[in-house]
Image (cartoon, rainbow, N blue to C red):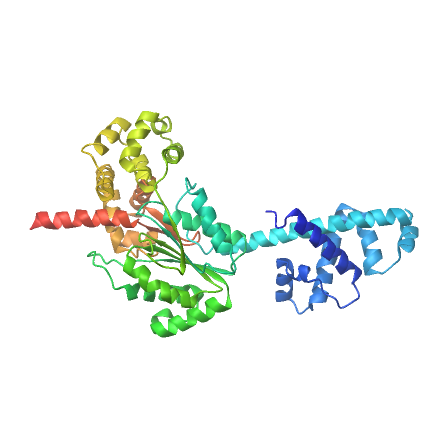
Length: 470
């Protein structure tokens, strides 16, 4: 991880030289104070800024001594002890002019050590921020390079773009894009904190909740993640006040994932705007905000044929499915004609390939012309459902009963499904392999959930069974 450009390294070298020259003067090089190494040292000690800079440079001089003892001795004698070039030349027996050359090279080496340590500090800080995100639901992102760059550019701005959104149909990759661009923004250390809120507005019956609930749920989850108070014992207005104060104090990135209804987005935007600046909000939504001037919206379209083929072959290789890795252009055209370049649909097709031949999959998907997205998904999900073992069907069927916002831990899944631990793990592996189960939570607290489209399919099955029972 390279924290500085060459120009910035030259400027830092100048600042290091100035700090050495002012060793015994209470002057502070502001460029050095901006280093995360310095901020960490000042936060962890009672040193003054000038004393902290001196301690940081002494630590780097010690590291330099292990690399170049003469250079370290020259810099220490010249600046810490305040000796003249002539005196150091006699002391080192290399002469005045040689001391000048060693000093110049030593400052460059000292700056390089400082850059390496700053890079390590920035890496640790970014990793600690990323640890607050749910595990990525993808191995590699395909086809969204331009969209990702545009969103990242807006996220890194400090003069605006406080509300951002990635919009597109279900399964298009909004969550994956938001995750990827968030991680890149965190590595740039643009934000001090990050909060990921997965939104749910539907009940098991499929009824839509009021838009206000979307905002209340987001506040409730933010209070919990910020550890501000017992979110169950505070009123919505108090939660809003607590969240606003924290977001105004600490520049943070808040991701609200899985918004579906236009009414929810319209209700959220003016309220989130009051919470933003210097913090930012990134929404993923199926509904593109219309006529809104306060939000930067990045629409996502289906993958091109080239990107769709790359995604299919990548997941086929990960699953060891040789027939899909070697898919012909003609077969890819057929797959693309049915899935329309939708990433989730393509992954579901890969999930079928270990049970059925490509010819059978294509024949089933192409049976009757399908040009509606929901029809396409129903056909793919039905094929996937029919290919599942009984235990996998049992587990998938109960998934809507667990918390969809955070998913369920293995212990919770076992309690609800009544499967033995061994059978449960086999079912989890089967559903994960078929891209029907999503890993959520954190690396320390693994949880599992399902995509909203998967839940819709399961509700269709339940409704169908209920109708047949009447």
